[in-house]
Amino acid sequence: MMPDAAPPRPSFIPPSVVSCKKPRNSQMSGNLFSLVRARIPSPGKTLIETPAGERITYGDMLARTARLANALVRLGVVPGDRVAVQVEKSPDNLMLFLAVARAGAVYLPLNTAYTVPELDYFIGDAEPRLVVCDPAKRENLAPVAAAHGATLETLDAKGGGSLMALAAQATTSFTDVVREPTDLAAILYTSGTTGRSKGAMLTHRNLVSNADTLVKYWRFTKDDVLLHALPIYHTHGLFTAALVLMLAGGSMLWMQKFDADQVVAALPRVTTMMGVPTFYVRLLTHPKFDKKLTAHMRLFTSGSAPLLAETHEAFRERTGHAILERYGMTETGMNTSNPYDGDRVPGTVGFPLPEIEVRVADAETGQPVPQGEIGVLEVKGPNVFAGYWRMPEKTAAEFRPDGFFITGDVGKIDLAGYVHIVGRAKDLIITGGFNVYPKEVESEIDVLPGVVESAVIGCPHADFGEGVTAVVVKAPDATVTESEILSALDGRLAKFKLPKRVLFVDELPRNTMGKVQKNVLREQNKDLYAS
Ligand code: AMP
Image 1 (cartoon, helix red, strand yellow):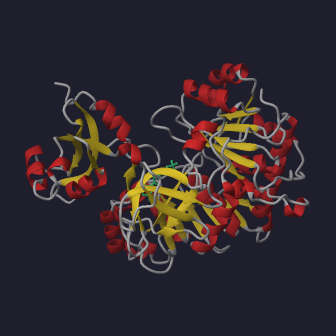
Image 2 (cartoon, rainbow, N blue to C red; image 1 turned 90 degrees about the vertical axis):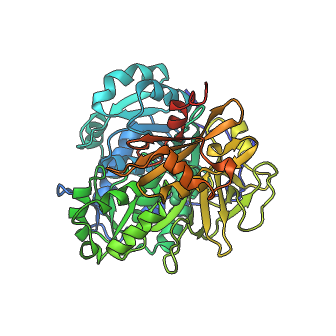
Image 3 (cartoon, rainbow, N blue to C red; image 1 turned 120 degrees about the vertical axis):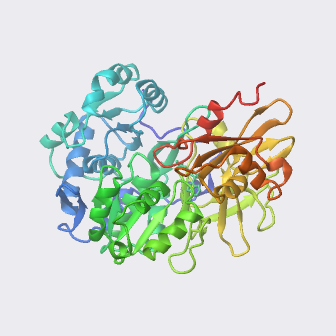
């Protein structure tokens, strides 16, 4: 077991971490819960409502999180300890996140899809004091938790489980642990498509500063009701959605997962919705989703994956609303956003948020490129994480000497100041020595008749290093062929950008956040040019 002391510092400490002042008393605690508490409009105000009719007020939240925090302390959790949580989404799951903050511990949410061998890696790496899992997984996880010296408790989606039984015996008063703004509040493992998954260390200040910026930028108030259908093991659902709403003193209509019928039925009761692009694509196929249903809505936001300009336009045509697209990542929270007032430009992710600097640099030299040119996006601000857990070299490698974090996203800032994302640096294709940005080729393919969407990848090629390869989803009944696509592209793109092959699939592989898993496509087609 790790001692309870603060986690090891990365050898490079991002400037946002060193510049924070020490809190002098509990009123000034940097604990994110202090701000959540300070923003409570009234104890009787609804925090969460579920379609099944469950209602949790802010007063209930205080009581429930106090019970849970007391239970954590009884289980031996002390400030700085990690609490790893792999449970189904539920209001109690959110209460557990807040309780961990109250106890001064570090919340470590884990995707519900992770298997036991994957959990073994995370638990071994993070060395949590406590692991909380669904009762159905207890038997399989018990040896893993024991091997790494962690206590194992359970929580189910209906508010049952051994942790809840302990909490039920505890009192509703708890003195929140004072934390400094630079103390860790959470570790979120990145999805990591190659190599080891990395634990992004997020401080109280990272989370609070970003959520508070979003409250103001997106004009959230206590009168807002947010439709919450995102998972909460991910930064989008937990920090961008739930924490923002709590700092606004608003309410959430809480859905365990996205279901188009359920969302359509709930829309009349909410004012705002945050989603991944897939949510909006699915809503557009729903016959009841129209202008009348959404007339009262104040805001729809999208992120975690690119929103096709075509989806943005179709949504505006159907509802009159321009989806506000924004860009962020686990390591940084939100970096940019289209404006609340002003043009929300399809295919862009808007402007850097207040106090956050975004620049575009040459990937090799780190030198800023002229405005309008493509390079790697780099970010600096109070939102930027404190480094990767126990990976000081990896952390140092991903920061520039002046403190900018190298996001790994490739993009540009246009002359009007809007940020565009062109893809991930690792998805860049190098063919015959030339760089090909997949998005440029995908955009040309996506507008062809009979094409729904495409993903362009590089596959190993003996002559070219990588061969540009298009994986295309056809519209139902479309008859478009490989040679038709290739001849349509000829003359529209430089020869070296033209796909060598066009493959057809029924659908693109996506993760739960709607991101296309290009690594899966690359693996499936690694021998395409072998002969
Ligand atoms: P995650 O850490 O799982 O939140 O993934 C972050 C990554 O998602 C970013 O580095 C981007 O590659 C991608 N991403 C997030 N928002 C957008 C967006 N609006 N458009 C394009 N890519 C996005």
